[in-house]
Image 1 (tube, rainbow over the protein chains, first blue to last red):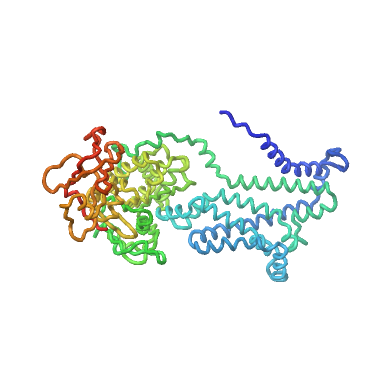
Image 2: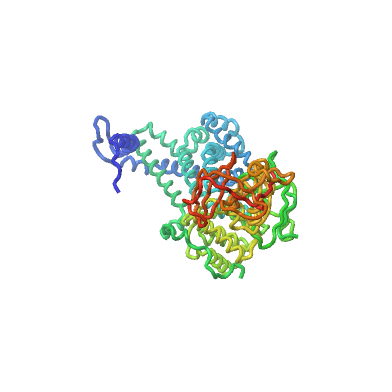
Length: 289
Length: 338
């Protein structure tokens, strides 16, 4: 089949867009791998010394670990609490659902600094550890994505129908949720999870103000080293980026349905004949025997 | 008592009365269709039987047991959805086995039953497929199998064929009827398609605005529609008032208290009928369409428009006269309520 020839302007727009997206990455990468790059178009040399320095710095490794602990703790709390909650609200409290749709947008209206100041005033000096307060704050911040994300997933699989079908087949609501609803919204959940994962991982304002002093996450570390040396900061940036990609890939891999992929290969395209098949052969043993 | 008895059932959402005092009896092994336009309450009634809707007043019996307060999962009814509602994460086999797994039946028994019901719907070779790898017709057959495998007391079908194209729909109508007769299972089938209701049912329940307006066998319903609504919903009737009939033939005397009459388009003859009680009047042929086995002719008589179906084998199209006399036997003028 011949493909239609596109106008050259389409290629120009695509090229510009690609350049805009790729250029910062490439130049950051180049800066991170050179000793000097000041008055020439391309860097004069290539080195991995900044990365080596970074890896040797115990503060960097522990910053990464702290970020991972903080992010995954918060993710776990958000998922465990929000998925069943959104499900229950969506299924059984349609009025609350209407209300919630507006309410979850509230975090957009409160800038991080105000939120952090409020949280500090409220909880500093209380028995609740600041780490928990931070997890709580991030939780609230993720609500807009989480609520709408889970809700859309539920809607797209026609949850109400599936629950009714399961109900009529004798399943309890809990069994139906675990065996039918959860596996079917997994993909939607994955996308939402990745979205909030990267926002948690890169979160700065709240973390810095609440526990930044004695809990240096990778973003705070990055800012500290940025002032020391530009090349090193670029190396931190590249490392941060690679880490983010690796963790995202890991989450994707862990949540993908392996069995499904295998069966996909077996599936044959449908033919007209399949549709026209006769439902009942003339003599067939009945269901009741 | 009947196998299924619905007694003075009322259901409303706020001010909106969806079901107004419905009473209905259904016998074991019967296939009944609930027929009506959208919003008439037919699906709601079906969902009430399944326990998916809560009603305010009335009683509901299934097999001698009052089930109003029984949760869906304990009612032992099968339900087939218009949208199939198959579990996308499970194979065909797992979908059908789901209900049996919940009942904690032994594996070998589950296997036996699932394979038997798959054979019944002729889809044994699709056991390992996922629902989205099947066509709409196949998915609905799996949905049917999934409902049948738990051996429900009654199978409720909520417009199961509406999403399918005409050819598959026709085929599945025949298949469902055959299956129902073979298993002797009680079925309640909701549809808005009068032709589908006629093909399938032992008895058709016509509903409008939350009420049952007529219940009859397909033949009775077709020959004797009770009201204007039924006649116009079932289709192919000429609906005339007694004044209009008098215009056609001054000698016509209507029954008292009835204001309208339904005349099936195939009972109006273009060839003379002899004997008593025949109305005849001149008419002018405006147009005709060939429907296949019948030719539908559009006549004007005086100021009235009439539709007349003539068997294609009875007449040659070229012989259709522009002006002719039409004949109706009195017996075919059916009085109806407005």
